Image (cartoon, rainbow, N blue to C red; front, top):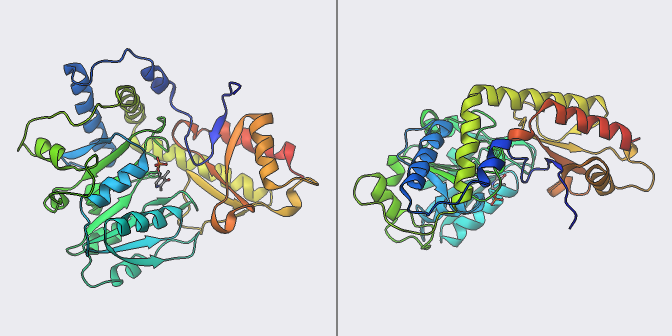
Length: 364
Ligand SMILES: *Cc1c(COP(=O)(O)O)cnc(C)c1O
């Protein structure tokens, strides 16, 4: 494979912050070294600030965002539990699969892709669910789903939120909004390579932790006892040292910039990209009012494609001729549209201008 250094504007990994790349190169300490344990504790503190929570059980699961999803479900949902899940894209669908494998009775509330889920429809779907789950930022469509109204009206249910694409990119207030369980990933708006899943759990949810979840690796019991003071820190698995250096550095960059400044930067870049696309005759896919700045989904007009080129050919040209990676569409957008990320370090005005200029070159 030849070495390439693309501008990653696809919805998958984003370009890491330079400080993060440097952190990955640091000498590897032992996973029980006191200095490494101190760094892990600092990662927990930084995650609490970024999640805007006081939750004691806040740490980075050693695996990607999907493992965060599994950990969030398997520890709180078991056979026969009723779980209401909002689905308006790929990741809501994945949550239904995970919950079903835990043996849950899944009550699925669908909304058309590209539109937000009506929180009242989720609240009305079942009189007494164990848990209500929703994706805060649907990366498959570029839609933001409301959490605040769910948190305020959830009653006895636990509120679970997929925050893989929202954390660090748009406002997310775990405590104020009443979110009980939330997970994220490193490679979206945190500007860190893939490999860890930040997770936070409220005390209210912790009181309902299952004794023997149907997973050994993702069982939160050992770490929960440690954080609540009922047990000593114990060896569980060998932590991915370099990945933890990476998230520590990435969260440091984010907190130095400031959460509000990061949200504003994502918003300004998303606004500029979306305006530039509309100006060029593209139609945005996600409904106005709930559009994410960090993920833009668009229909690609046929008349803009050069003769004999498909949208996939245009993406190949962007990648190989310009070094810009954007994402293909999913669902109705497959083969007909794109998903363009502006996440973490990738959310820069220079990347917006680079992409728009490249599109002016390639398209009709
Ligand atoms: C990327 C993503 C995931 C999956 O994360 P992985 O790190 O790919 O396992 C889950 N939910 C959403 C909303 C995502 O964008």
